[in-house]
Length: 484
Image (cartoon, rainbow, N blue to C red; front, side, top):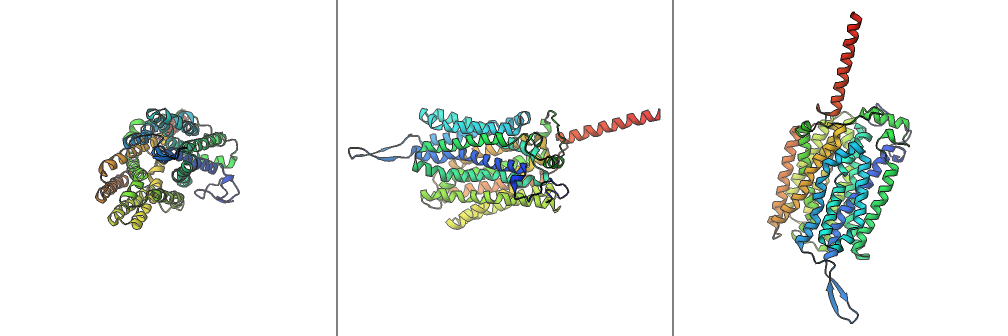
């Protein structure tokens, strides 16, 4: 039988790790991966569809004459409002999503959020034909539905992920972010060309609905509530995370301690720093490749997908390495989080600057690809960190952290747009230099304030203190009774 995790506990399943279907917690990872894939196809598809929705098409009339038409005559500023409206809704539900996951179950809120996003995606063509206001309103609602995803997923992992498997499980599920991004970029263009722009929303929306049904059928709130998990695997998970079966006490979050906690602030600042560049490149990389690298428009989409393909592939490797260093006792949890996060920020700073200093097509693309791929190490730091600090508050902590990342996602494209008005090399270099400076700020804050330890204010520590107090009082009462 293969030992799992820290080598001391075994999940009792006589099968190698690669046979993931024999372990329920790995089935949860697979379903989460597919969920984030669907989530990002429905988030990114409009970025591609809006090109087809507003392009001038040549139409040959019956009388042989030619005229030009477009589905929607939206200005560039109107298109910008449509694309950015998603993030306003996304920001609203980060912390509430973490709070609701405690009350209703992370799996339930996550499934409902992605399911509603899928249904709203099916109505996107109708909203667009109804007017730009309807489309913006629908995108805000989509953002609100998707905003619960990351906080709720952390709530799920707080119940399903043993500490020494935590990094790889979280990273493998988050790889769906980049698979979904690439699929949306590539498949949306094919659908728009082969069928029409409406088909983009119908296809991705329908797939999202199918995933939602499968998620509710397969994934349970916790191992205790899973009908198909073996008793040995359930016992292994519960012992690994220090959870008592049947413990359903209400969770009261120490809000003041959370918002003033240095490790929480460190993770939040790092989330902002990483997402500043992530969203800047996600929205502006095709434009940068066209204006600064002078690529043809039809090739920029495929080239822009390369960095995200690299990061998607590297997430699993980074997660495995983070767990391996802990299992082998080479690094503590704090050292893993700090070193992985800060090494990533150093590398991203260097390659960002190097890429725009060289400013030659192939070397610059290589540098940007390496910089984005190194983000997988950073995700093994701040993105997993909430589960270390307080597992029972992990959803709320991720909501706080991801709120900062969402603000970066709103601000970064706007700042870039103001700077690159002429599209000159100097303007683009300034944009990359700003991203490098933000990485350095995140580096210093995380290095000095980060922690991978259970925090004194965490609910778990409070419960342990209460148990020790009760034990001490019981012992004192017993001693008094004996002395009498």
